[in-house]
Image (cartoon, rainbow, N blue to C red; front, side, top):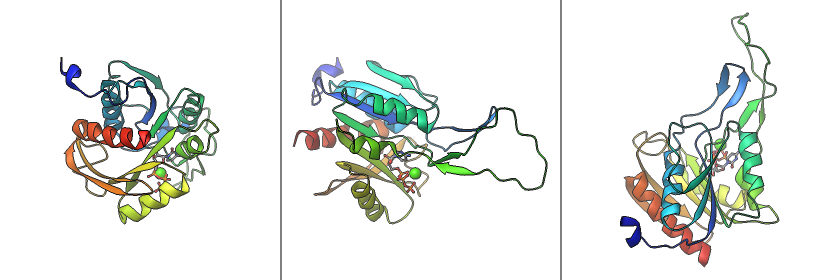
Length: 222
Ligand code: CTP
Ligand code: CA
C-alpha cells in the first residue's frame, strides 16, 4: 500500500492536535464561533498517523470524519478544549495547536432562550484561557507548535506570538486571502522558529500537512 512507501518519521511519537472552531454558548440555542472548517488540523492528524505517530485529535465541532488510526476527543467550548488538552500532558511529546479557539466567551450562559426586547442589546464577554500558552509552560512540556492567523503584517505578528506563547515553532497563515487558509482546501504558510523562517508555497491542505509534518518532525528531533 501507499503507506508502506511513506517515511515513518514519527514512529511511536505521541502527538496531540487541536482542530476546528470552538463554540461559546450564549443561551441554549445560540453561540459565538468562527468559520474554521477543521480541515488543516484533520489533514495534520492524518499525515501524522501516516508517519507512524500515535495521534490524539481534540476537535471542536466540524463536518469531518475522524481519520483512521486517530483517537478523537470531541469538545465544544474553549474551556472544554483547554481541559482536554491539559489532560494529555504526560502522554504527549508533540502538541500542535491548530484550532481556531474563540478568544472570548459570554460572561454567563443564559439557562433559557433569551427573548428580544430593546432595539440594542449587549453581551458581555470574557477572555478564554490560552491553550497553547498553557501547554508550552506546563511542567511536562511537549514540543509545542502553534498557528498564527493574521490578516496583515503576518511575519511580525507570528514572531510575536511565537515568543509570547513560548512556542517552539509557529505556522503563520495569511487569512486575508479567502482563496487560501480559513475554510478553504488550499493553504500557504510560513514556518517560523526562533532560528529560521521556512516558506511553504500554496498547495492542497493534505500535501501541505505532509510537508509541515516533515518540518515539525525535523525540528522536534533537533
Ligand atoms: N490559541 C489557543 N488558545 C486560545 C487562543 C488561541 O491555544 N484561547 C492558539 C491557536 O490555536 C493558535 C495560536 O494560539 O495556535 C494563535 O491563535 P491566534 O488566534 O492567531 O492568536 P491569538 O493569540 O488569539 O491572538 P489574536 O487572535 O489577537 O491575533
Ligand atoms: Ca485569536
